[in-house]
Amino acid sequence: MAQTKILLESGTNELEVIEFYLDEPEYRGSYGVNVAKVLEILRQQPVTSMPGQRHASVMGAFRHRDGKVVPLVNLGRYLDKDLVENEPPKVIVTEFNGVITAFQVSAVNRIHRISWEDVEPPSDMLQNFSQNAFTGVVRLEGRVVFLLDLESIVADLNPDLAVRQSARVDVRQGDRTYELLHADDSGSIRKMVKKLLEEGGRFVLRQASNGEEAWEMLLALKEEAQNSGVPVSSLVQAVITDVEMPRMDGLNLCKRIKDDPVLRALPVALFSSLITEQLKHRGDAVGADAQFAKPELSELGSKLLELLEGDS
Image: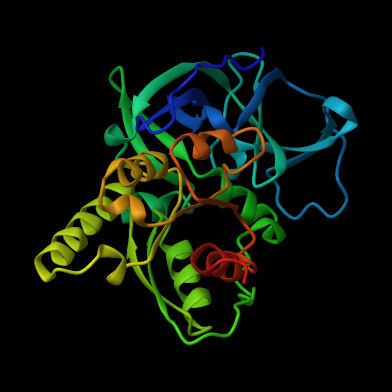
């Protein structure tokens, strides 16, 4: 079963979610993943054991298209679910952060088009119970669907693919300090980005947990600048935003900024696992000034300075 593509206009604050199931003895759990991360859906695949497997949920690997060897993760096993096999399992093949990973699930339902406004951030209690495996919760046709944080799962299984916490941000020397607004729904990413960018002395960060909060902060800064008779760029010099966030995504945030006659002067950089050659056009369509792919942080500071100061 190949992935069905539904075309979305960039910046509409909508996403497409593939809903799938994990069948437990007395319960069918509904889960979802952003279509933008899905390459295709396959039948159950024969796998070969991988040397050095450190987690029981990694079933092994199989040969995918173009001869690529792809690891297969039993998602129910990762989430500590005792699954029953009511029908032959399905395999969801994903790509993000430049890495292809496959996940075995009980069944696949359908694709839903929803608004990020309908996505609720997961509670602290839910995150504690789920090993921080979810990015949001949405209600679809009377069902509660948990949106999976695939980046967190893959990073847990292979720490080499996590955002580089030990990276040292490379920045050019200079006299000016820039104030940035950074939006990301992951508390750990916000903490990491703030620490790494501020330690060089060239940046000071304001932070928001989603695009809606960032937009409200920008409107408040715009009003403050107008009341003080100064340009808004004297209060904040650039915006860095993730793409996937509850309430308002980064593409819609970028579009709003670029549609605003005052705020459009601020450079906007997208920092997301969805920055790929295939999806980069979505950021271009909403006027993003730069797009940086997770998980590598080491060059973020220098690239931001290039954006703010030019190459000279």
